[in-house]
Length: 464
Image: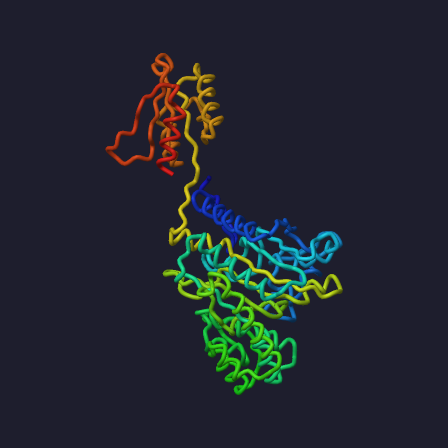
């Protein structure tokens, strides 16, 4: 690259993946997908674009500008939006196809979404991968919700998280919604701001004081950015903050008197009863401050938090909940749904850091080209390796000497190099150079050609 050319870079909030990090991400996706299937979910591949009219005002902080947090553009006569989650697209698909689908539809979908977020290293990005699963239909919702809680715990254990490293926080939006009704907060835009403010309580950068500001007139963050608040009175703010400190369900039941709150408490009690039938109830924690900032949620909610050194506590990696009216907005007839979403990109960043899920990129064996007159024989070796399931490649520039070829192999951290010159072909032998051994270890051996597959397989098996 010439000196006057700048190194090209990605826009802020986007990442490329390669090497072991990409292998880790793929392994995470496989573990999650296998568990979705194990729990009875079937795959759906959804469009990455939706008509903007189908997205709705579910995400943005500013209800007056509901599309502020998504990427939209005009395509001919249509206004399109890149999906910000999988749920809106699922609701659209289900409403269009429900007559062909089973009465209880359990689907999973894994793919990328995009939002106009404020990037934060590898933890908060503008484009990231989600793994979603949902249950749609008239089911016993306590069983369905418990099933999703069990799926979260089971998946995280299969990702090698330890029991003390995560907790599954459950809540019910009706509990807080009843309190808001008792406080005579009736304006829908004001309600929306209250929910969004409460949902930020566990954010260490905001905390109680920040939530109080967001419930009041405004919040000014460290950068000077201003967020207009819900404009509640001091009495309303203190009532909400004090209520959010309650953790025991009996105490919550004695304080919250609104009928809608009582309904949410009763639903939580029934859910906890079903969860006791499973083996993961010790991972569950009641957290009524979890209300989720997306407005289509209507009842039970879940947010899974990690407690990992270097990442702090309260980092969310799997969230979801019930949505009662979302599908009805397309279908015209209310159809209940519930779902969860794993943050694959965030899980990749965390597991890469703490190194609890071992993965190795399956790199190829290199067949070196010592002399072009033996090129056909090198391809015979290559074909033998590949036909026996051994990842392998031939060096693609026969003009380069052996030293250059081995430099290439070392830069790629390849495990083995196959070296055959005139003597090897004459004696019907093959020289194998082990490239990843420590200095001083015997790194080269010559074997009979017939033993090639056995020798390579043993080495690769031992070092994976």
